[in-house]
Image (cartoon, rainbow over all chains, first blue to last red; front, side):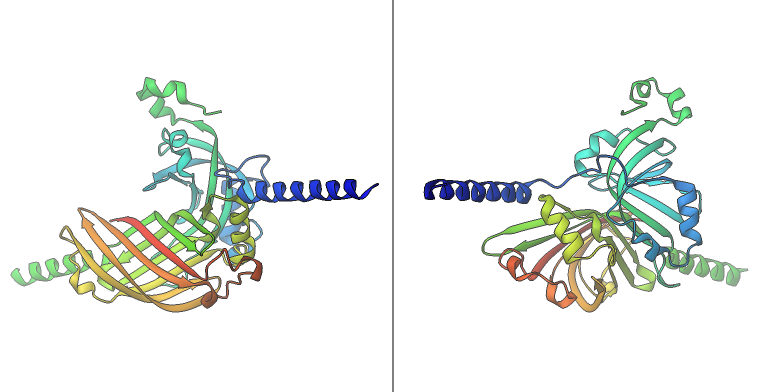
Length: 171
Length: 180
């Protein structure tokens, strides 16, 4: 191989390296969890186990950053800018909050309390009250970057509104 | 009879004051880093905030892993390398409003406030003072605050290779609507 070919090869490798680096650096962050979930959980069982675990916050650290798929009834819909679904966990005072990126607002806008949803989210953390003076008296799992995989309207809601019939399922 | 009614009224009023709690679990926080060569920001809409006027207590909590960046690589570095979110899942603030007497939570208006308390991030707790504004509007209290922190104060290590693009000084903005 002559000197010219060596220089051209090195230049090509250099340009490819720069291009890959630039692509990775500028690749947008995901706004929702995609692909196969790391965990698929029965929300009632999962929460029951964590509620009984005195070191639940530490236990939960193995879930942080991982994706989880779960099905639950929506207890409430909150949010100033983006939508957070408060999912019923089966245990009083133990909340599971599933936050959707603002770009998902139109996808989750039809969800109301009482609906059944299947979501895939990223686990952010689990908190328990710090002391008796804690203004946050409940235990809570925070999920973000959620995707709405399935949405079943509350039956009584469907019977009241014909408009909801065509939006029973997102996927 | 009159005395009993007065006692009942007093109990009801003080009970109401103690029970009054403004709260949200979907407030907004953002932060910005700016250096000569790069500027970036991230947002999080999962702020849990509460104000108990009668106890003059204020609390904030934010799941750190929920911050949304524009760049996926930056988000990954933030979560795994800088903030170590699997170890330190939440940042929180517990404090008091130093001039709470100036705020009438029963009357619509805008009040400049200052809050002092303990801010915990990345497992490190520091005393901080945060200037802000409370806007009382009906049953809601809108809280807006801007403050700065230093990464180095919270043992957040910025690698030498990134020091030109990630600032040690971070601007934080909080915007929450708390409801009764």
